[in-house]
Length: 315
Ligand code: G4P
Image (cartoon, rainbow, N blue to C red; front, side):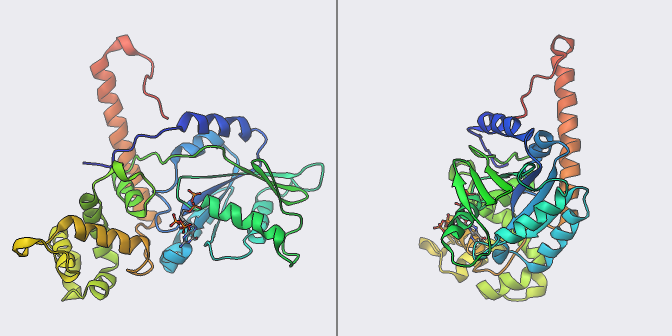
């Protein structure tokens, strides 16, 4: 079963973005550096069109630094796009953020043409933390960021630099099945939308290929070289056994084992991990789009000519 996610307030957010976008020069999309592809909402590009974009890979302290570099290079190679990595521990991210946005919109600036930036991100990506850090700078003594003030949904990071928060939430649109599991593992989708054990097995499937040594270290698993080819369920069982997640009769409590590995991933107790590379995610996305197109074509065939127009809502 794939992740079942029933988004709540997408239309409110969609309308808010559409209303704001005409007066926006740069769109910031906050992503989770552990799953940049999966934590990106593909519908955002449809809503923001040709606007310049800044991708913030947040929670870099939890992510694999080599893969973060690969993602930054991937995004920086795209037209009208820049990327930077941040974490909640960074005390003064405003200057880096301002510089990146100014580079994206060099024709804006000065009091009569302030740079207008809209920030978006799916739940739990760290948007509130970043906004609070930016606002908190007002109290700081250093002159790192001049005049940081919060006006309703707007933060003035400089006299001619306005950062608008998206009202409501941009919910993830899960079109890549694997991405759904990554989102669940990260804690970005509601607890009722997934089954711990399934998510843990998918997490193991991703981890055993690139981070077998971290699994071996954390759970004292034997024969690290064999881990990539071991069955996911047997690995989960082994992890449960090593961590004492047992039931009567000497059976492993798989639900408890699943909880252990998910929590260890979320807290980075396993180590700094990024679940997907740009190339991997691009391949999953391409495949998902083909499947989606096939699904739509089949549906259109089934519905026949009486339903010529598209009926499925994107949000
Ligand atoms: P949101 O507004 O996008 O929904 O996210 P929010 O800022 O509330 O952050 C979600 C969780 O992610 C919070 O943890 C927050 O502390 C954590 N977080 C945000 N940015 C970073 C980061 O760069 N690195 C790390 N390691 N964590 C980050 P929480 O456990 O839900 O709450 P809290 O008890 O830590 O406040």
